[in-house]
Image (tube, rainbow, N blue to C red; front, side, top):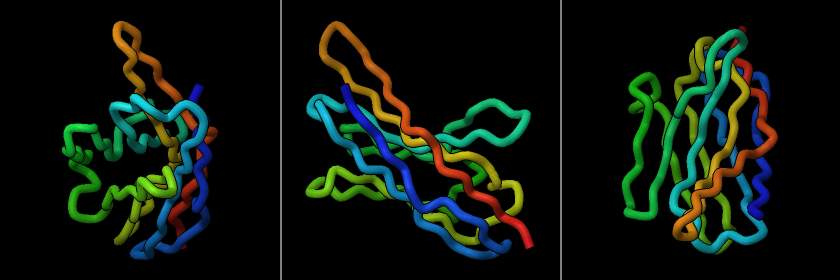
Length: 119
């Protein structure tokens, strides 16, 4: 089992910045990928940024150039730096981890953290 705990979500004005954190604990070996997803009211959950063990980070087109994924292996924590926030970035942001222990694939989610961008 992997536990993911997000933090950092809050109300911010348009153009502002936030940094989300996701601390992983438990059986974190063999984690293949970690990422951030978001879900706005009435919409499906969507990928925001995802890092795989191959060293590649993918971003949604809507956040490219504004959001940055980073990680601190010593703290087992990943971050999402969000700059130039827009009202359409308002959503619950979820941390995700994918663990592969051949032949099984396990997926874990955090509880989510609310980001609201509004004046």
